Length: 264
Image (cartoon, rainbow, N blue to C red; front, side, top):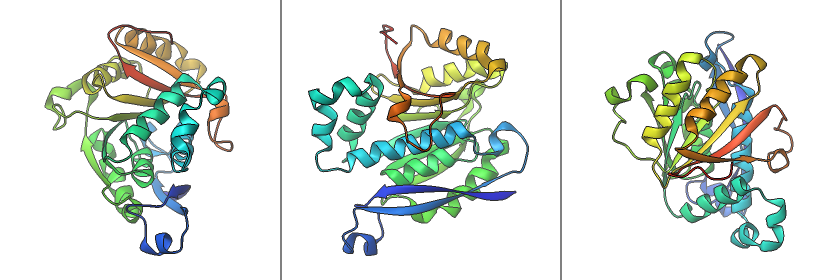
């Protein structure tokens, strides 16, 4: 096992170190430490799609920290350069800023995305994966505990998408669901759809990253086919992502539960 670091710029305010607030700094640079295996199952390492998702969320919260964030989000003059996905996601976060978000991560692996979002905003984060990955998630939660914003908590739970009815979370409702690079095995595609269908309320929003892999193209097509009719989705354009952590082969989507599938 070895450690890797993920640098984040977080906005100061509730939950930040008193020294940072007193100094007048509007942001703080932190370094998350994530343990991962040298090799092993797909959930044992931090994949590029997770880094792209994390760094995109960093840019979103950085934008929201600006005094004129609401005007920046809603300014009609800027809308031509903002995708529907980015606009809806920014509006969602802005509207929930006074509240502690309830967030679910599916297929969390190392827990990197859950830990990052808890450092970026106030949230109760339910970090889930199969039992075999909980040891890694728990270690990483402990390593980064000091960086969680004031009211934030990250809690690990075992969750098998094919056995949701046995999960402690089966009756929980969430504001936001994170999914990073989870379309990998044929047998997990339909259970992933069912998990999203189960946990995503009409008011919830899903942020998902998918990396292009030629051998997985049919699995991705099957996933979107299953989603069609129950969800609508929009893609975050590459130019809206972090300038250093973006790639044409990694796609970010904002997904919503809907009775009618709208323009994708």
